[in-house]
Image 1 (cartoon, rainbow, N blue to C red):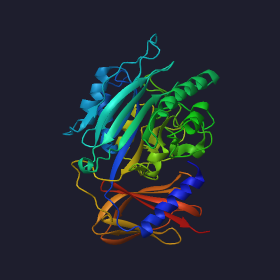
Image 2: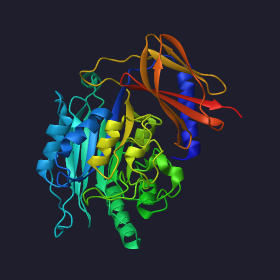
Image 3: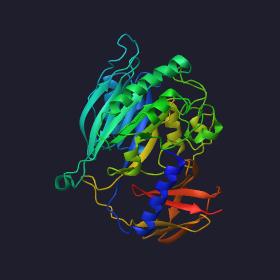
Image 4: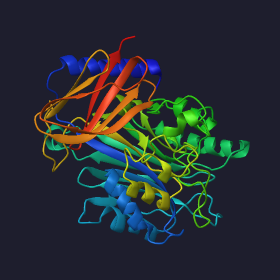
Length: 423
C-alpha cells in the first residue's frame, strides 16, 4: 500500500471516528504465521509445551504453520499446544503430505489451525511447485447474523514456504512459486478477503517473488501492511520487523544463527481485507513479529527489551524456532457465534491534542497495550498502559510531525485513533 493511499484511508477512518457516531459491533480476529523449525524433530524435545506458552501469550484465532515434518507433529501442535489448559476450541485442516518434488528426502509441510467457534473450514486444496506445496484454505466467519443476513464472509488463506537462500537461482525459484500462487489467486471472485502468509525467504522489496505478490493481483491485488520499500536483510533501520534468527548461534546444530537481521516471515492481505470492503479490515499497526521490540538487531531474541513481552515468552521464542511468529489483527464488522456483542462506543475511547498528547476516557479502571505508528508502518511506541476511571493523559512520543495512528489493545478489542501532528 502506498503512503498516499494509507494516508487517505486513515484520514477517512479519522473522519468516521469524528462524525460517524455509533457503529456496528466489531470482533477482532488474530492471525499468526509461524515457522516451527522441522517440528517435532529437532532438539530440545517436547517443544509443543514451549509452543503452548507462546500461543497462550499471543492468543491467535488462526494459526498457519510451516515446517511440520509429520502428521504426528501436526497433532501435537493441535492437542498439546493449542488445545491445552482447558482450551478445546481449535481444529486443524486435513493433513496433506507434500506432493511437490516427490524425490526430496526432506518433507516440510504447512498446516492450518483455526478456532472453530469463530471460523468454519469450507474447503482446501494443494498447489504444486518445483520446491514445496502451497496450501489453500477456504473459510468463512461464524457470523451470528448469518441466518438472517445470508451474507457469508469468505476468507481464502494461502500458506507458503518459499525456496530458501540467496543467489539468482534461489530467487527465481521463489518467484516461480509466487507466480503459481498468484495464478490461483486470480481465479477467485473479485473482492475476496485473502490472506497470504508464511516463510517467504525474501531479502528485499526488489526481489521477483515480492514484486509478483505486489503487482500480480488482478481482481484481488495484494498489499503488504508494513510497506517497507527497501532492503530488509541486515538493515538496522528495519530491526523491529526482522523475524530471523532468534539466535546468534545455532541451537544443537539446528536452524540458522546470526541473530535477528532478516524479514522472512510475513502476512500479506488483499486490498479488500486491508480496507474493509467485505466486512474484514486490517487493524492499523497490528502487524508485528512477536517479541521483537527493535532492540536486538543481530542479537538473540532474549536480548530484546522486555517492555512488550515477558522474558519467559522471549525465552520460549528462543528455544522454539529460529524464526519469530508474525501476527496481525483483522476487525470483523459483526459478532461471531457465541460471543457477547461489543457495542460501540466502547467502554474506553481515545482523544488527542494538537501536540500528540492522548486522552483515554474510561468508564472503569483497566489496563491494555498502547501502540503508535506512523504512515509508513513504522512503530513509534509500544507500552503497557494502566488507566483509571475518567480521563488518563498520555504524553506524546518523540516523533516527527505528520500522520500517526494510536492503537489501544484492551479487553480483546483494538481501538484505532488516527490523528495528525501539525508542523
